[in-house]
Structures are given as C-alpha cells and as structure tokens.
Image (cartoon, rainbow, N blue to C red; front, side, top):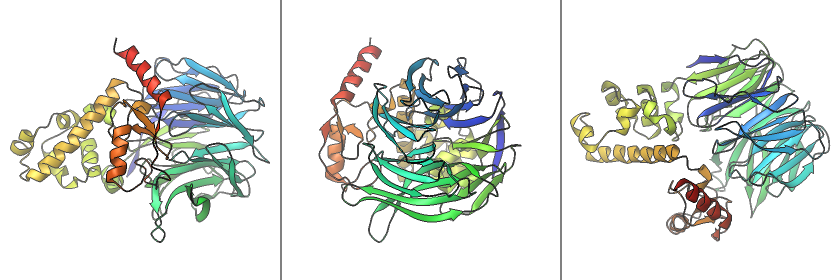
Length: 475
C-alpha cells in the first residue's frame, strides 16, 4: 500500500521540480524560489526559500553528497547553493543566455550538465565552476537529462522528441527520435540488468513525452563494444501527455506524472501498474523517489508537493540495502523491519517486533542481548546480525562526521588516504582496490561492469582536497 503522509503548499505558483538528498527535499517553482525541507519532519529549513533567480525556476537537483544544490531558470543561469546555509557558491551563465530548462550532476560530483531552450548543452566543472565543454542538438529545446549510473555517458531529451547520448567528453554517440511530439523527461535506473546470453550488463532508461507514452530502453556502453541503445517496451496507463518519470533507488519501481492529473507507479520487472494516485487537482509536473527510504514526492501545477509513503511489508523483497542510516537512531519498529528484510533477515522481523526493537535499540544490541533477550539460538545467525549492525554503525558514524561522500572509499566506507582512479572513472582507496582486483572478477565495485583496464591512477587532486579538509577539521 501507499499513503499520502504530507502535503507541502508553500509555493505561490506551479511546482516545476522536486529532488531528494539523503536528508533533504528541494522544490522549485514558477514563483522564482527554491524551498528546502528536512526529511525527518518536513519542516522548512531556516534559510529557505532560496532567492536569486529573476524568472521561473525550472529544475533543481542535489549533488550525490547532498551538500550542494543546483537550480536553473528562465533567466539563463544555473546556480549552485550550499545546502547547509543557503549561500550561493556559483552563478553559471549559459553561454547563449538562453533559458535553462534542466540541470544534472554526474554520479561522481565532478560535472554538472545544463540544457537550454535553444538546444545548447553545457558540461560544467562542478569544482571550479568553469565551462568544460559545450554542444547542441539540431532542433528543439533541451528539456531532459540523465546520467548513467557509472558516469560514462549522459542522455538528453529535446522538445522535438530526440534522445541524444553523449559520452563524458561530450562527444555525441547517438541520436534518435524517441517520442513524436517531444520528450519531457528521462531517467536511468541505478541497477544493472544482466544479459544471460552474452554476459553483458545493461541499464534501463525511461523516457516520457507529449505522446502520452513512457518508453523503456536498454543502454550499454563498454570501451570494447562501444555504445548500444535498444528499445524494449512502452508502458501504457496515462491518457494525456506524461510530464515526468523517475526510477526508485532500488530499481524496482518506476513512477510517472501526467497532464491527466494522475501519478502511476509501475513494477519495473513485470511492467504492471502497482498504484494510481489521484490526489493532485492539476497537471503533475514532477516526481522523485528518495534515495534510501520508501518515500515519493510528486509536484503539480496545483502549487503543492505531496509526500507518499510505501507500506514496508508490501515492498519487503524489493527494498535496497541502503536504508536511511542518518536517521537510524530515529527509526520506528517498522523501519527496523524494513532494514532486516533488506539484509536478508526477514525471519527475525517478528522477534524484533515482539521485543519492540526500534532504531536506538537496534544500534545498542550486543551478542549477549541477542542471545539472552531476543533468544536467537543460532550462533551463525547472531554473528550475521552483529556484522550487519556493525556495518550500520559505521555508516551512521560516517554520516554524522560530516565527511564529504566523495572522500569516502566505496569499498571500505572509510576516509581515503591514498585515492586512485580506476578505469570505471570512480576513486577508491589504493590498497582496497588492489585487493578487490586480486580477489574478485575484474569488475567495477560501483557498477558491476567489466573493468576495461586494471590500471590505477593516483588521484592527486582528490588527495589534496582530503588533506585540506583534514587540516581544517582536525584543528
């Protein structure tokens, strides 16, 4: 089941976009403002609303760490904000001065794409705020953009209906007509799909448009075989243009919003409709899933943003392993049940509920309490639970320390001392990545795709940034 748990009605005009970080929700509007809310109770932050843009704000998105928010506007600018205090970090002007319709961060936070009404697309360096590369599509406005999970490529969609694929150097790899009447949105699933016949891995891409359709594509990109885009299927359900689509973080669901005022949630594996939500009174313009908890936000021309919560029990088998660690101490008993399911410990749900184990109790469990209080007799099961709890404690510690995500090794989940760049484009602790390559198949820890090379290059820029951060925070 899914239920409406909160409605935000602070904007004075149409809501154009909403986006989640691990701890915040951002919304933007025709009223020229961006608003920030805390996910724990949906209260608006003291420095919200954010005001700078002189015309409508069309899109907003968080950097992967959640420390930076990007917004773009009809005024021709893309603005970067510090989410902790609302201060402006940079104002990046589209070279053509054209209205900017969409902006997206790359998965590693190094780049930001902005697409404009005149068809220009700019790849910005997100650290120096300088223009890196610039290109354009032949016809129409750029209104949609999505990065592949591995960051090797990104896709743009135009008002003329073309899907255009670019690599990370902004070379055009492919372009084709996807929606006859124009594309409105596109999104990648973060979870790869395996091709059993050839052993290749693909990513799902969803696109939607004015033709009332949602199309599913399969995308692959390897340095050996190159790029491939395959049409897979069309999802029906809406009876009017579809304005927004987004995958859930675990890739199990796809949501869409339409001119028909409805929100539809699909099962991505069966492509069946799971839910149809009809709370909005005007066009649904935007929808977004939270990155680690079972929340969905939908925004509309009715000036509201609705927050929907999914029943944990109904989605137990599809819950991602990344639960909201930053709120672990505040988890309810149901949240703990979600976490147990995600860790493959579904059989313990009843025991934990019977003993009223919430987030705080979970983090304080010991091998003695598991045996004596919860009566878990199996030594192996107790050891598994303790390992999972210890992993959770480490994640909580990292989140509470304020260490930027890009400084954390994806393998060890600890602050990197000797960062290196692998051929998948991600940075890792050198020793951890060397051990990974020697003990595992030659695949990326981040994407599960085959590494084109095992060469590791020292990331001196990242190391200097980490050293500067340590000097500042260890005084």
